[in-house]
Length: 363
Ligand code: UD1
Ligand code: UDP
Image 1 (cartoon, helix red, strand yellow):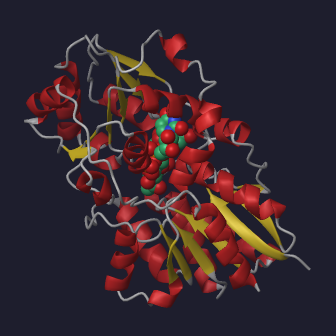
Image 2: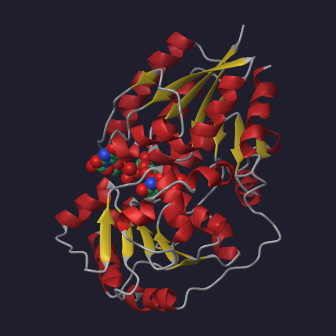
């Protein structure tokens, strides 16, 4: 009988990352996948678009949990996932990243003594004010098998006392996706649709709680962006959380900023590749900027992806009162990072390595 793997996803980056693993799992003769969508992200442009364009199978379960406080969201998921685990009796459970969906999946699984596998284990910002930091620490410590995207992430896990035989440095699945979708993204017509030209615009994404829920920081970000010249329009792919925060704080975006809805993966790929510079607080977009070799300003106090800064492609600019002057300088003189003899994020075979390790675990 095929061994059953229960995959739990719920947010945009998780749908994207699950796309490759899911494809490989479903080809397997020894394993079968049951896909659970918690419903943490539910707007079409944060959820359905990825299922469609990346050919993810329709979820076997959609918990439709929706938005709410951390406790409401995580608690509701926990109760529902427990029921699914009881019914499906999986051989192991697979979770991705650091969201509330990850945490709920990890907690529900651990109490059943079912092996938990964590994809993207080990990144640390060392800032426990971030909900993501809490989610990933707990998930890592509940996991039986941990797939670290970088050597640095693996080291963080060893330093927290996680036994080395549970950790594999597989490389980053986002890098696999970057290689896999390179030819598909060429078909995107997003530049024409937006009326912009290669390397003549900046790309912005902001969604992290520490920036959107802190009105002072959000104000610094908007004021800094509004100070930029209209020579390079800022394409702002706004997460609904950011759109709402701008409204609540009565912050107006300047003429040089073009707000657009969140994009599908392929249009985002094209926009990242062709940008003069990327400005973001996203963990995924920071790494993708490096993969594309596009300079990136990371609007954070610290990053769980220090490799992007170490190789010079990303610069950390804290959202404070100096941001405007510093950002203007970066935009006017975009830089290049190092040529990178070492690929911190693996060789593009992370998904295959993970699936082959899963084979070993289930047998
Ligand atoms: C979540 C993750 C974050 C991850 C991000 C990926 C947590 C704690 N945070 O942040 O780590 O980087 O996903 O994008 O798990 N909303 C909508 N439509 C939706 C989903 C959300 O309008 O489909 C709005 C709601 O007002 C909601 C807010 O966005 O309250 C925040 O959504 P939530 O899922 O709680 O957190 P994200 O900011 O998306
Ligand atoms: N992304 C996308 N459309 C967008 C913004 C981001 O497809 O409008 C992709 C991006 O290319 C990356 C992933 O979403 O692959 C990153 O997710 P997000 O920024 O939501 O979360 P984080 O990585 O910070 O957890």
